[in-house]
Amino acid sequence: MNKLFLYTLLIVVIKHTVLSQENNLPPSPSHPVNQNPMPPKDFRTFKERLYVGGNVGAWFGSSTFINISPLVGCKITKEFSLGVTGTYNYYSQTYGNQKFVSTVYGGGAFGRYLFFENFFAQAGLERLSVLDYRSIIPGSRVWVDNILVGGGYRQPFSQRGSFVAAIFYNINQTPLSPYPNPIIQIGFNIGL
Image 1 (cartoon, rainbow, N blue to C red):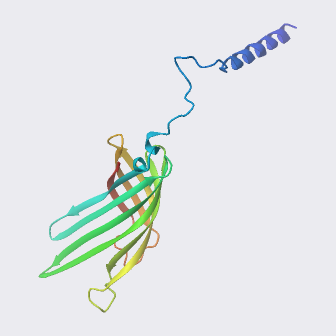
Image 2 (tube, rainbow, N blue to C red):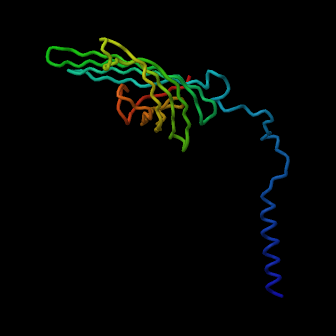
Image 3 (tube, rainbow, N blue to C red):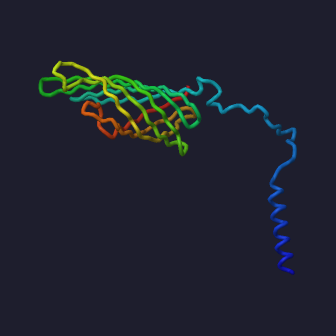
């Protein structure tokens, strides 16, 4: 009988403790309930959903390389964004008395999904105009489609800005693709 009483008492105490966690009291005047909560700051206006950024790189010497790759993105949700990119690369190399010069230009689109706060996965399509070294016509150009899949990490440096480091693989690699796998990019994003 003693054990039955103790078990019953234990169940009543646990039930009372669990039910007491529920707050059925009306809100106090000092803490009114907001009936029309404001959306998160990033989603009040279209402009606040936008961010800009990209990659810039260069090296100089007997080989010269300049890369400018701006991007504009739009947050669809806090985690998912879509964007467009542009690309311009200048490359020159001197062999003996002869100088080889090449440019690559074009653009693309991407989708980016943010997970684990600062890590992201990204996939995109990039269409670039490159020199067609296989053509018998000098200076001939061809469009090359690149499908880039990968991800990266962003490190915030302000409330609306971050540095970005990413690695991508071109799953449509061809002999005319302008860069070999893996593709490593370091850049930045800044919210408007």
